[in-house]
Length: 472
Image (cartoon, rainbow, N blue to C red; front, side, top):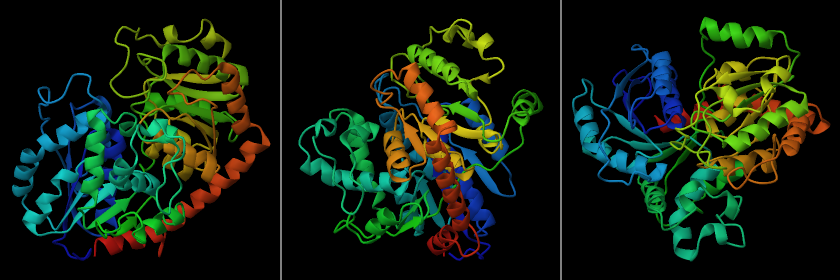
């Protein structure tokens, strides 16, 4: 499967959600440009969304990769209407297998390697049908991978709920995981998503290799523990390939958006603006939104804030839970007079903003983020320190890594998923990162990490070598 072989054809599978789709698309691009592969990417979604369509339209380039959307499978009879996101994704990815099998069999060029993302592991068997190598792509970091593949063992030794444990959860060779930081599927062991996640942890180890969206220098101890088989033990010996950071490149911005945002940014002092966004699926409650508005106003720091419909309840912050009864007028969510009082201080944008392009602007000096791994890497790659505001998935682990291990973020005293973060604390968090000496030190550290990440993809860099080794 040499990269220079014109017949090398990688088939990639992306599960729903931009957090999975974007890194899979960018991995596909790398396989073409770096490894000289032909690439076909199959995309699975619940229903095509405007954000997904926008990402695909900006990406699709026939000379690079062929992108094929698989028709959505009807899972309404298989999951409850209020089923957790992980349950819905896991069931959908199982039900999509016949369509995927047919689509792969119908390809003009037979695949020479199959790469599935985090939730696509039940399709690994198709690689055996073609007698080709099979890989799992983990779009997040190695610490989360370690927890996931060690979870079947934790399932045996921990008897009660993980969140009720008094001690941190032990993972051999790795940083322990605090009970309050566990990924969402581990919050309730009686929920179907927990069983699905345990099953996922087992399935990952059926691959011939695991690609991880991190780089050697970012997580050396965790990667070393994985390679020493302290986690995999007698189950399997699966090679780990850190191939990150894989993020969206800076792209073109439409004229109307550029006029509003970037003309304003161009007039601001260097590193003076805080960007506030909770990603494509993150939301806060109406009450929290008002406290956040007051906190930004009280801080007297410049900001760009992406505001969307509030979540149903306090601290919910997850997909598919917006308040359908809320007004579409963003002004109705904010304190009375907020827009007038802050008109010379910041900008409020409805629903969406070009995140990578904003983070790359020299006027941006901080990022209040939900800590999705895509957003985290985009912030690091632009040398921007963070205010960590984790909401769902593995974001609490990400926030802990950023604040305690890498020391490039500050975070609130109470988890946003457990209560309201008040305006005074928000004001202090903003000032800590934007004007205090602590923030200056974080800016220096995150810029060092940026250089480290760039070296990983430079000539003879660790990630470049890892991808070449995996695909040889």
